[in-house]
Image (cartoon, rainbow, N blue to C red; front, side, top):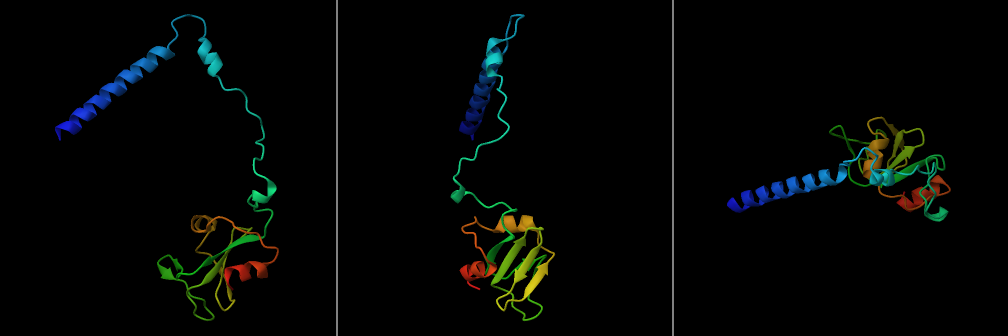
Length: 147
């Protein structure tokens, strides 16, 4: 207990001394402007940021694709309720689609599609992984995800 108090006291003293030294070096005693402050002023930045990744490594933007999809194998729980397909009763192995208009659609293993209003794009972004491929057709993407 005493070592911790001593260590905290030493840390507070070192921080106080360090802040005093910083204050001493940032004050300029003369009437003219500080030359270090003029040098430290940030230069105006360029308006555009150059792309540092080659095109084959860039993630597609929302305008380039019709939507995103991911596989969701465990039961999908929305607002404390397990989501089931209203047509076949399936409750796991979903394909979750995040469409360009920010709507979420679910596809059960029997290929029934349901518009899900309880989920949003923020939920999809929290639970999806990185984009590993872009598919030219929906069937190619579903085949890759095992549907």
